[in-house]
Image (cartoon, rainbow, N blue to C red; front, side):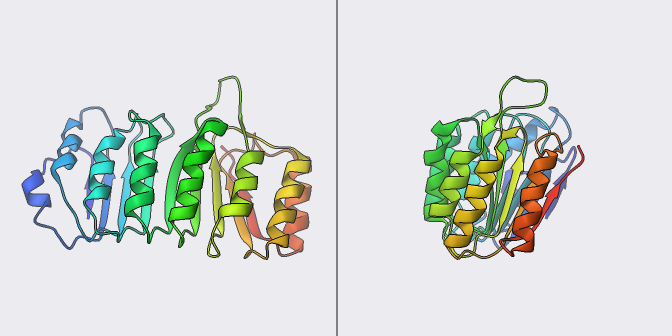
Length: 228
């Protein structure tokens, strides 16, 4: 089911769709204040929740939706680069507790203080295949997220099915960081990893050499750098 643009649907009507498995909410502007009606909706068998909204995310709405499921969520994709209006702590706690079958999830990151939250997801969601991490450092701002700590955590805590990593926003990592990451990934005997960055500004020419090296070795299934 898709809700796109200026849609008016009573929460009572949505609650009748108890067997709904996929919900896409695509909002274009602040006019869509009716989205807050989702706080009254329970979709116990939901498997995919996809939110596309260009502004600050009211995460508390989706926390309520997640809590109302019966642990069947496989995909949780909230497409927003802005810092959520609710701290990510409650979001992470909810995902870790109520989503044991999760295969795809997105979260936000701005410093090493977020590592504990990221670790909770990796430990609790044993079936996780794909992770998107959005740096809260945006273009035109000073500073970048350091990827080294995230790389180390993924080596140690990601499950046997994990194979896709998407790093959005501004990140910083050295050649040594990449070598240690891919070397550790290989030593752990993990399945080939696909890694994607959403901006060419993050990946330098010397980084490409390392990516290609480990792709040739079979440590990477592939890598991609989008031309933002």
